[in-house]
Length: 536
Image (tube, rainbow, N blue to C red; front, top):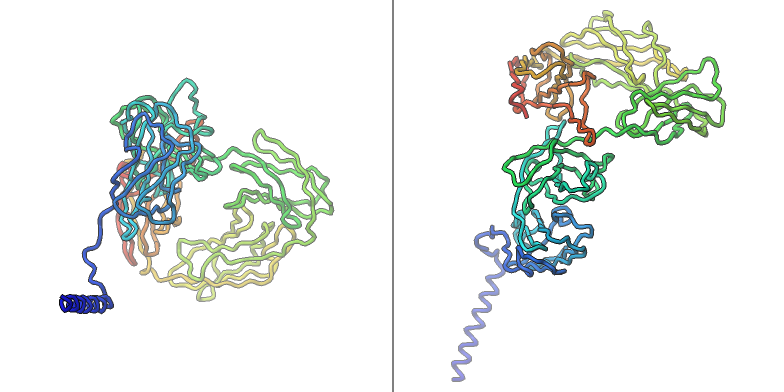
């Protein structure tokens, strides 16, 4: 008996040693787990009725982790006090939900976890998992679905919510500014949406790019879209909503001195048409310029400096009038700086331009020279843009040329009387065979006027034309690239795209994109069509 025990122990030791040695090598593994986690029990159970619990526990068949739960979890209808979800940041085979809000009576609640639940080892996602319960005696089961798009851009924003507001006796259109919706769901794939577990009734449907994540529309921050009429459930209709950013009503904010002779007038909304008048005494030779700053909520007011501690202004915009005093503290005035806005290679479609930091007052064309490869003078015209801070030189350009541009002293004088020193630039054009041409025909044009735009693959504007009566275009001397065609129906004939307004129930002007991209190579001449009835 003793021998047999020793023999068993010896054999076991050998096996353990062998196993230990084997574990030093790379494990063979086995088939990779591709299965998503499975929920095995829920307490209270899924689709419970007459729900009164304050705590929910969801148990899974394996360890899971929650990813991006704050963005992924959508509770419909929204709760004023968000529930407490645990554990977050560690793996577990359960999820605990602690309800901190008072639940509405006779209401079906949906907890949509989106794609936040994944297994701990392989990261397999339990897609669009929902936990549903009702505080009434039945589960609402109606659904509504549809798609969204951006009213102007090719691609819609991510993380857009679809919101339904039930029409009751107290319903008004302004409800979206101050109250949470009756139901909410996130767009699933940046295009499609589905709201489930809804009850019969009439609803307002909106889409919201909710930057503050507070379920209310804030025009200063959010994009909005709306279905133009109320919807009635149940329905088999599929709905489409276009998102847009409203143009804020003009509101004057404040004025701040930037530097001597330069003041920012901050505002909200479109400043076009603003008038800024100096009420304080000013000399006879006083000069001023208003410059609309791109990508800034400010208008620049440039003026020839006055010896004063403060200035009194009247600011007017349509029916709004305000007066204000701006204290002056700066002692230094800016020096004139001039930058070449054209690269060394000049496309035949481009216009040579320079930019200044101070508005241009006068141009002395006789002090500007352009010569070609043969040292021959080139005729040109000058154009100062509306900002008064960019000068364009337009001239006939030929292939395979090198142009020398010279600005002699006093060619440019700014608002403060500063002038330039001698400036020299060069620009080279390429051979004709590096360019291509697109001959474009538009079909099924709905109305005139419209705006035709050609964009490159970075969605930057290459060509723009305001069109009143034609459908055929010769787009020549284009660099090899991938191009996008955009058409904007200018219904109010103001030569720009206009956005929508929710309360006024005005739709954004229609923007159409050609579905397929145009690939253009060097020395190509291609004929293309854009059927506007088949646009995206």
